[in-house]
Length: 434
Image (cartoon, rainbow, N blue to C red; front, side):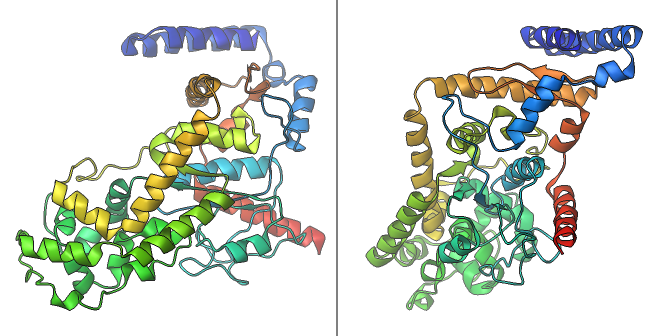
């Protein structure tokens, strides 16, 4: 009865496109549901979960989840390269919930915070030792280095990461590191002002400017010093003696073009490294196509729809004034030269994502629509804080699963809360082994 009433409530919510009517209708129907349940069922009955489905959930947690073709098992050894300012918080929370449900062993930072040795490559002492000598998951910030990570993880480990468009990434980095203040830029669009003459800021602020240049490629393990180095004849450039608001002369722009363009050797090195990542990683997700990336990840990892559900509020970052400002053609070209490695990474893996999707066939988009539908419904159910369970029925892409208040609490946990839960659990495992 609980499931039928709740499903009816969802049906009316989805069918009506009028927002105001929708809110009013869901509120009224929610009250009807609660009154009906209070009158006809005791608390124990409302919270009961069928023994059959409990057993099914237990089987899933024993690593027996199958994809829609019924042949592959869920992969539970994986490394997520958590690239800074690429929506990786949301993804990390998904992975932390997945691992917690299955009692997987995470590689966790030895110190407080989300970094394992970063910005250095990880080494012994940067992470808590494994209680059983095995790690299943890395989902905190590391700087990826193949030979180090593969020596720490099982042979069947899956590797994946996430990127975003470099200009969008630069805006987020500017806000994150408060670079407008650090660079003393007083402009409505400080990122645009920076991109007028990025080579000037490299000379004036050599330390902090590194966050603006090829940061995604750096996190992915590329030796960016070769691409960010100070060119031997860079001092010959006629930098404008900076008075804020002064635009660079065309002669400066043309000289900077010659300096910032990749030479053939650098371009070859970059392409070789990207090819290696493409071979070793099962997927590089793209933030602008986040749901598509998650569905692709689910298929490649043989997970269930439940495993990739996420809190829709997490991605609504606090706005900042220049978040949606555009750039001139000159500023865009300057950034393409300034962060050439990041553009190469993004363009390659954005293309790769769509090639993977196209190879999946038309049912990929059917699953994508279904996932968006279910994710919105789950978020709605959790926001209502109803003291009833709800069974999501089976489909071509998932077996039936149960939602309850515990799952909803897990869904909305932030990364730092998961950090504390996982670290406490890790230490408890250690003492049990000892």
